[in-house]
Image (cartoon, rainbow, N blue to C red):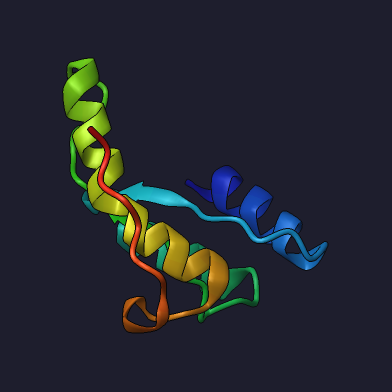
Length: 89
């Protein structure tokens, strides 16, 4: 987790909006590392755990579920201010 978060924060420091996707068991670690790296307000986007054993269609469903939150983090806009995202068919 620490390497992924380190990379995300390095991109952010360069002005490149970036999102860390994180499953539930690793959220506390992500928060701790964000604080240790001097960015305690950084928000990782939670995705369901586990991921590695999912079938492709389940991965797509998880991605769709996380999409609104990813856009919120990238744009800094809460979902009520965002344009709606079309559903995947």
